[in-house]
Image (cartoon, rainbow, N blue to C red; front, side, top):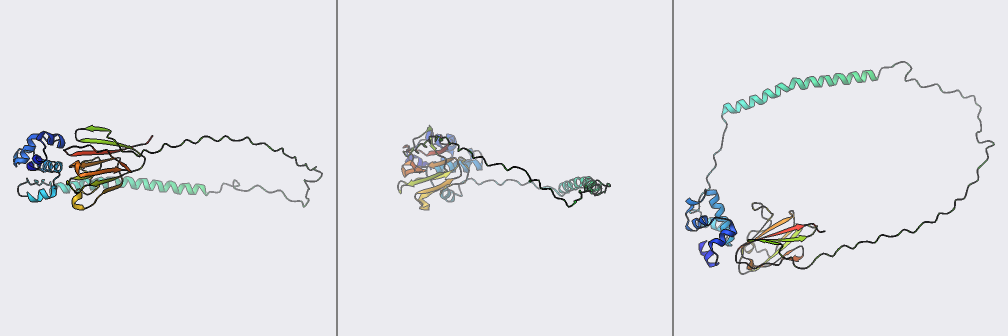
Length: 288
Protein backbone atom coordinates (compact mmCIF):
# COMPACT_ATOMS: atom_id res chain seq x y z
CA UNK A 1 0.00 0.00 0.00
CA UNK A 2 2.87 2.35 0.72
CA UNK A 3 4.47 1.50 -2.64
CA UNK A 4 1.16 2.13 -4.43
CA UNK A 5 0.76 5.49 -2.67
CA UNK A 6 4.26 6.65 -3.52
CA UNK A 7 3.91 5.44 -7.12
CA UNK A 8 0.70 7.49 -7.43
CA UNK A 9 2.50 10.58 -6.10
CA UNK A 10 0.18 10.91 -3.10
CA UNK A 11 1.29 12.26 0.29
CA UNK A 12 0.10 11.17 3.70
CA UNK A 13 -1.76 14.46 4.09
CA UNK A 14 -3.67 13.85 0.84
CA UNK A 15 -4.63 10.33 1.97
CA UNK A 16 -5.73 11.69 5.35
CA UNK A 17 -7.93 14.29 3.64
CA UNK A 18 -9.46 11.70 1.28
CA UNK A 19 -10.08 8.84 3.72
CA UNK A 20 -10.65 10.91 6.91
CA UNK A 21 -8.16 8.57 8.69
CA UNK A 22 -5.57 10.18 10.98
CA UNK A 23 -2.04 10.27 9.63
CA UNK A 24 -0.63 8.28 12.58
CA UNK A 25 -3.03 5.42 11.81
CA UNK A 26 -2.02 5.50 8.11
CA UNK A 27 1.66 5.23 9.10
CA UNK A 28 0.85 2.35 11.48
CA UNK A 29 -0.95 0.49 8.64
CA UNK A 30 1.97 0.94 6.23
CA UNK A 31 4.47 -0.29 8.86
CA UNK A 32 2.25 -3.17 10.03
CA UNK A 33 2.11 -1.80 13.59
CA UNK A 34 -1.53 -2.72 14.35
CA UNK A 35 -1.08 -2.29 18.12
CA UNK A 36 -1.38 1.47 17.67
CA UNK A 37 -4.80 1.09 15.97
CA UNK A 38 -8.01 1.30 18.06
CA UNK A 39 -9.01 -2.39 18.02
CA UNK A 40 -9.11 -5.10 15.34
CA UNK A 41 -12.50 -4.04 13.96
CA UNK A 42 -11.38 -0.45 13.30
CA UNK A 43 -8.01 -1.70 12.01
CA UNK A 44 -9.65 -3.78 9.27
CA UNK A 45 -12.07 -0.94 8.46
CA UNK A 46 -9.18 1.55 8.09
CA UNK A 47 -7.26 -0.90 5.89
CA UNK A 48 -10.32 -1.38 3.63
CA UNK A 49 -10.87 2.39 3.25
CA UNK A 50 -7.17 3.04 2.59
CA UNK A 51 -7.01 0.24 -0.03
CA UNK A 52 -10.11 1.56 -1.84
CA UNK A 53 -8.60 5.06 -2.06
CA UNK A 54 -5.55 3.54 -3.81
CA UNK A 55 -7.68 1.51 -6.24
CA UNK A 56 -6.61 -1.86 -4.76
CA UNK A 57 -8.71 -5.03 -4.60
CA UNK A 58 -9.73 -5.29 -0.92
CA UNK A 59 -10.75 -8.98 -1.07
CA UNK A 60 -7.46 -9.96 -2.71
CA UNK A 61 -5.57 -7.89 -0.12
CA UNK A 62 -7.36 -9.64 2.79
CA UNK A 63 -6.71 -13.06 1.24
CA UNK A 64 -3.01 -12.43 0.50
CA UNK A 65 -2.16 -10.98 3.93
CA UNK A 66 -4.63 -12.99 6.03
CA UNK A 67 -1.89 -14.14 8.45
CA UNK A 68 -0.58 -10.62 9.04
CA UNK A 69 -3.89 -8.75 9.40
CA UNK A 70 -5.56 -8.47 12.83
CA UNK A 71 -8.32 -10.98 13.51
CA UNK A 72 -11.82 -9.87 14.52
CA UNK A 73 -12.32 -10.71 18.20
CA UNK A 74 -15.48 -12.79 18.93
CA UNK A 75 -18.11 -11.06 21.04
CA UNK A 76 -19.19 -12.86 24.26
CA UNK A 77 -22.73 -14.17 24.31
CA UNK A 78 -24.99 -13.79 27.33
CA UNK A 79 -27.07 -16.79 28.39
CA UNK A 80 -29.79 -16.76 31.04
CA UNK A 81 -29.61 -19.30 33.82
CA UNK A 82 -32.37 -21.88 34.30
CA UNK A 83 -33.62 -19.99 37.36
CA UNK A 84 -33.87 -16.68 35.45
CA UNK A 85 -35.66 -18.40 32.54
CA UNK A 86 -38.14 -20.06 34.92
CA UNK A 87 -38.83 -16.77 36.73
CA UNK A 88 -39.56 -14.98 33.44
CA UNK A 89 -41.94 -17.78 32.33
CA UNK A 90 -43.70 -17.72 35.72
CA UNK A 91 -44.12 -13.95 35.56
CA UNK A 92 -45.69 -14.19 32.07
CA UNK A 93 -48.05 -16.99 33.18
CA UNK A 94 -49.20 -15.02 36.24
CA UNK A 95 -50.03 -12.01 34.08
CA UNK A 96 -52.14 -14.15 31.73
CA UNK A 97 -54.03 -15.85 34.60
CA UNK A 98 -54.72 -12.45 36.16
CA UNK A 99 -56.46 -11.13 33.00
CA UNK A 100 -58.52 -14.28 32.12
CA UNK A 101 -61.32 -13.80 34.78
CA UNK A 102 -61.79 -10.15 33.78
CA UNK A 103 -62.13 -11.03 30.11
CA UNK A 104 -64.64 -13.79 30.92
CA UNK A 105 -66.80 -11.40 33.00
CA UNK A 106 -66.89 -8.83 30.18
CA UNK A 107 -67.84 -11.52 27.65
CA UNK A 108 -70.71 -12.90 29.85
CA UNK A 109 -72.07 -9.37 30.46
CA UNK A 110 -72.04 -8.68 26.71
CA UNK A 111 -73.96 -11.90 25.95
CA UNK A 112 -76.60 -11.11 28.63
CA UNK A 113 -77.15 -7.58 27.28
CA UNK A 114 -77.53 -8.95 23.74
CA UNK A 115 -80.14 -11.52 24.87
CA UNK A 116 -82.19 -8.89 26.78
CA UNK A 117 -82.14 -6.58 23.75
CA UNK A 118 -83.59 -9.22 21.40
CA UNK A 119 -86.29 -10.29 23.95
CA UNK A 120 -87.50 -6.70 24.44
CA UNK A 121 -87.46 -6.02 20.72
CA UNK A 122 -89.68 -9.04 19.90
CA UNK A 123 -92.37 -8.30 22.58
CA UNK A 124 -95.88 -7.54 21.28
CA UNK A 125 -97.31 -4.35 22.84
CA UNK A 126 -100.95 -4.64 21.73
CA UNK A 127 -102.01 -2.76 18.64
CA UNK A 128 -98.85 -0.73 18.15
CA UNK A 129 -97.78 -2.84 15.20
CA UNK A 130 -101.32 -3.14 13.79
CA UNK A 131 -101.84 -1.49 10.42
CA UNK A 132 -104.65 1.11 10.03
CA UNK A 133 -107.88 -0.12 8.46
CA UNK A 134 -108.23 0.62 4.79
CA UNK A 135 -111.38 2.43 3.63
CA UNK A 136 -114.00 0.21 1.99
CA UNK A 137 -114.49 0.46 -1.72
CA UNK A 138 -118.13 1.19 -2.63
CA UNK A 139 -117.63 0.29 -6.22
CA UNK A 140 -118.17 3.87 -7.46
CA UNK A 141 -115.36 5.45 -9.41
CA UNK A 142 -114.96 9.16 -10.05
CA UNK A 143 -113.31 10.39 -13.16
CA UNK A 144 -111.04 13.14 -11.87
CA UNK A 145 -110.07 14.24 -15.39
CA UNK A 146 -113.64 15.07 -16.38
CA UNK A 147 -114.45 18.70 -17.33
CA UNK A 148 -110.84 19.74 -16.77
CA UNK A 149 -109.61 21.96 -19.60
CA UNK A 150 -106.47 20.82 -21.26
CA UNK A 151 -103.55 23.21 -21.27
CA UNK A 152 -102.00 23.99 -24.61
CA UNK A 153 -98.22 23.50 -24.84
CA UNK A 154 -96.21 26.71 -24.69
CA UNK A 155 -93.40 27.06 -27.20
CA UNK A 156 -90.12 27.98 -25.56
CA UNK A 157 -87.93 30.57 -27.18
CA UNK A 158 -84.45 29.32 -28.14
CA UNK A 159 -81.70 30.58 -25.89
CA UNK A 160 -78.58 31.80 -27.63
CA UNK A 161 -75.42 30.34 -26.15
CA UNK A 162 -72.57 32.73 -25.52
CA UNK A 163 -69.22 31.73 -27.01
CA UNK A 164 -66.79 30.35 -24.46
CA UNK A 165 -63.31 31.82 -24.53
CA UNK A 166 -60.60 29.21 -24.51
CA UNK A 167 -57.88 29.69 -21.94
CA UNK A 168 -54.34 29.82 -23.33
CA UNK A 169 -52.38 26.63 -22.75
CA UNK A 170 -49.01 27.16 -21.11
CA UNK A 171 -46.25 25.36 -22.87
CA UNK A 172 -44.02 23.26 -20.66
CA UNK A 173 -40.37 24.33 -20.68
CA UNK A 174 -38.11 22.09 -22.71
CA UNK A 175 -35.83 19.83 -20.72
CA UNK A 176 -32.15 20.72 -20.63
CA UNK A 177 -29.91 18.46 -22.69
CA UNK A 178 -26.47 19.97 -22.12
CA UNK A 179 -23.76 18.64 -19.78
CA UNK A 180 -24.29 18.89 -16.00
CA UNK A 181 -21.78 21.12 -14.21
CA UNK A 182 -20.54 20.67 -10.63
CA UNK A 183 -22.98 22.30 -8.18
CA UNK A 184 -20.65 22.27 -5.13
CA UNK A 185 -17.22 20.92 -4.10
CA UNK A 186 -15.89 19.93 -0.66
CA UNK A 187 -12.44 18.30 -0.67
CA UNK A 188 -12.76 15.08 -2.67
CA UNK A 189 -16.62 15.32 -2.67
CA UNK A 190 -18.24 16.68 -5.86
CA UNK A 191 -22.02 17.24 -5.95
CA UNK A 192 -24.08 17.39 -9.16
CA UNK A 193 -27.78 18.34 -9.26
CA UNK A 194 -30.26 17.28 -11.98
CA UNK A 195 -33.80 18.68 -12.13
CA UNK A 196 -36.13 15.82 -13.06
CA UNK A 197 -39.22 14.03 -11.78
CA UNK A 198 -37.97 10.65 -13.09
CA UNK A 199 -35.83 8.14 -11.22
CA UNK A 200 -32.07 8.29 -11.77
CA UNK A 201 -30.63 6.07 -14.52
CA UNK A 202 -26.82 6.19 -14.64
CA UNK A 203 -24.23 4.87 -17.14
CA UNK A 204 -20.51 4.77 -16.19
CA UNK A 205 -18.17 4.16 -19.15
CA UNK A 206 -14.82 2.77 -17.94
CA UNK A 207 -11.55 2.75 -19.89
CA UNK A 208 -9.43 -0.40 -20.18
CA UNK A 209 -6.35 1.52 -19.04
CA UNK A 210 -5.51 2.89 -16.54
CA UNK A 211 -7.47 0.55 -14.26
CA UNK A 212 -9.65 2.24 -11.68
CA UNK A 213 -11.92 1.34 -8.77
CA UNK A 214 -15.65 2.12 -9.17
CA UNK A 215 -18.29 1.66 -6.48
CA UNK A 216 -21.92 2.88 -6.60
CA UNK A 217 -24.07 3.10 -3.45
CA UNK A 218 -26.92 5.22 -2.18
CA UNK A 219 -26.13 8.06 0.26
CA UNK A 220 -25.23 5.54 3.01
CA UNK A 221 -21.54 4.56 2.97
CA UNK A 222 -22.40 1.14 4.48
CA UNK A 223 -25.44 0.38 2.24
CA UNK A 224 -25.52 -2.33 -0.47
CA UNK A 225 -23.68 -1.76 -3.73
CA UNK A 226 -25.91 -0.77 -6.67
CA UNK A 227 -23.29 -1.87 -9.25
CA UNK A 228 -20.28 -4.27 -9.44
CA UNK A 229 -17.51 -3.12 -7.13
CA UNK A 230 -14.67 -3.91 -9.59
CA UNK A 231 -15.72 -3.27 -13.22
CA UNK A 232 -12.43 -4.48 -14.78
CA UNK A 233 -12.98 -7.93 -13.21
CA UNK A 234 -16.70 -8.18 -14.01
CA UNK A 235 -16.15 -7.08 -17.66
CA UNK A 236 -19.32 -4.97 -17.45
CA UNK A 237 -18.90 -1.82 -19.48
CA UNK A 238 -20.70 0.48 -19.30
CA UNK A 239 -21.93 0.03 -15.73
CA UNK A 240 -25.70 0.72 -15.80
CA UNK A 241 -27.93 1.49 -12.79
CA UNK A 242 -31.56 1.78 -13.96
CA UNK A 243 -34.32 3.57 -12.00
CA UNK A 244 -32.41 3.81 -8.70
CA UNK A 245 -34.70 3.82 -5.62
CA UNK A 246 -32.89 6.81 -4.07
CA UNK A 247 -32.75 10.57 -4.60
CA UNK A 248 -28.95 10.69 -4.29
CA UNK A 249 -26.36 8.33 -5.83
CA UNK A 250 -22.80 8.10 -4.46
CA UNK A 251 -20.24 7.11 -7.13
CA UNK A 252 -16.73 6.49 -5.72
CA UNK A 253 -13.96 6.66 -8.35
CA UNK A 254 -10.45 5.45 -7.43
CA UNK A 255 -8.78 7.14 -10.43
CA UNK A 256 -10.85 9.58 -12.50
CA UNK A 257 -8.50 9.15 -15.47
CA UNK A 258 -9.81 5.59 -15.85
CA UNK A 259 -13.37 6.79 -16.51
CA UNK A 260 -14.39 7.86 -20.02
CA UNK A 261 -17.72 9.50 -19.12
CA UNK A 262 -20.68 9.36 -16.71
CA UNK A 263 -24.20 9.85 -18.14
CA UNK A 264 -27.26 10.46 -15.89
CA UNK A 265 -30.75 10.45 -17.47
CA UNK A 266 -29.22 11.10 -20.90
CA UNK A 267 -27.00 14.01 -19.75
CA UNK A 268 -23.23 13.77 -19.32
CA UNK A 269 -21.43 15.01 -16.18
CA UNK A 270 -18.56 17.49 -16.48
CA UNK A 271 -15.76 15.49 -14.81
CA UNK A 272 -12.95 17.27 -12.94
CA UNK A 273 -9.36 15.99 -13.22
CA UNK A 274 -7.88 14.94 -9.87
CA UNK A 275 -5.04 12.57 -8.84
CA UNK A 276 -6.92 11.38 -5.74
CA UNK A 277 -10.11 9.44 -5.17
CA UNK A 278 -13.34 11.30 -5.96
CA UNK A 279 -16.73 10.92 -4.30
CA UNK A 280 -19.33 11.98 -6.88
CA UNK A 281 -22.82 12.67 -5.48
CA UNK A 282 -25.63 12.89 -8.08
CA UNK A 283 -28.69 14.49 -6.44
CA UNK A 284 -32.18 14.53 -7.99
CA UNK A 285 -34.14 17.74 -7.38
CA UNK A 286 -37.73 18.48 -8.39
CA UNK A 287 -38.11 20.42 -11.63
CA UNK A 288 -39.82 23.83 -11.17
